Length: 177
Ligand code: SF4
Image (cartoon, rainbow, N blue to C red):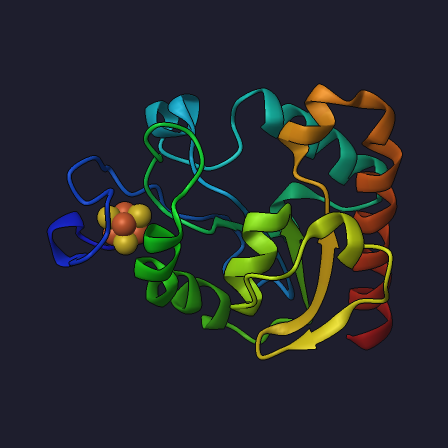
């Protein structure tokens, strides 16, 4: 994990702690979220709060297993006040690149617009539009854009979209491995 004092230029360097990834680091499927919340900081791992509950149920419904996935975030420290600032995403890019590149990946599931932008480096992309198109290639693997589980928590009617995208990620991994 990055040491906070070694993150010059990041607006969160005073806050910490940096929350590391979870799951299988050699997994061909990586899920990238936005940032840790209060529960994640307390438990020291990503996606353990209410949005995590939504995610893990959708993962199971898509025929995937949590233990077979690798999960990380666009920024490793909890944002203040709420969403990660562009400067923090930029400052945390090296850490994200290390997570994504630690092993050959087939699929990178970008959970929400922040993750999509962090993974691609393209600040014009939005997840609602991007998920209407096919998965596209990035330096880390095929990117499958999907909705952030926190959004699905607020709009449960969108849950099938998250499940559908996770199923696509599974199908790509099955057919390419
Ligand atoms: S968010 Fe990333 S770059 Fe910023 S202090 Fe935390 S680990 Fe460092």
